[in-house]
Length: 282
Ligand SMILES: [Zn+2]
Image 1 (tube, rainbow, N blue to C red):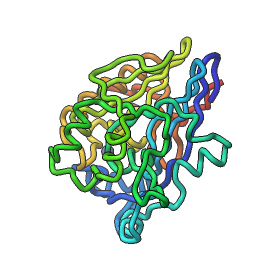
Image 2 (image 1 turned 60 degrees about the vertical axis):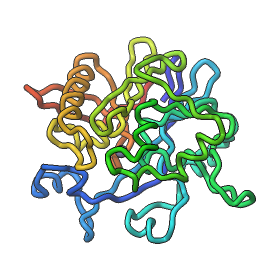
Image 3 (image 1 turned 120 degrees about the vertical axis):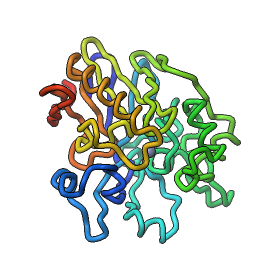
Image 4 (image 1 turned 90 degrees about the vertical axis):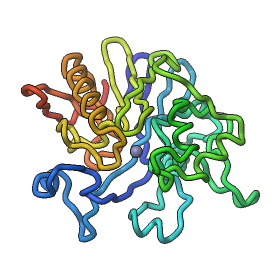
């Protein structure tokens, strides 16, 4: 996707499968399986699409996908791909050293897993992007480190500790512009301090809302995940964002949708929206 000032490249950060019931919370399987077919273990296919944003001579990554630091048991439970973000970057000839900034929407393993990699010489995980600053909301970092919300299984030490130890962690509070045309927006619900990323270039606006709405199948206001810490907040913020996107002609970039990434939004009624695959930015 290219425009006048900003170039966005979609990168495959790896694939996984998660339990369909957990992915759709209170929604009966009879409804969600029409949108996301389950496998024999009741799991649905997800991807982790990361964004490479080039703006004003700087390279930003949004999300880092699943990474590759897993046991065979992890790989089996979540059907994790071997392929991860670094493979996608190297295939395009992009040196990880050239990345200036990494934005992590939140620190769950399927978003922050690629932030670090195992260094076989040192025998420990190190930041995958050695020159980058890693931008995280302070509240999200503190929740992850404190074990708040008993989500410790997804806040993995090997993904987080190397960032703190390297001094490359940049904790921010609230919304703000982090590069020309690239904005953070805090979107509480899935976690208390999750952030999305808004890209504005001329008249065009795109948003990566992270796990506020991981796939197009989650566009229904009540289609929330069991993983959401604050389901009601998630619903309210999703409704607000969908109204904003429909009214402003925004493009959604849905990071875990296995079919498409870019979607347009049409409002079809009170709390009802239709998403349609969108063309890449011209
Ligand atoms: Zn998450």
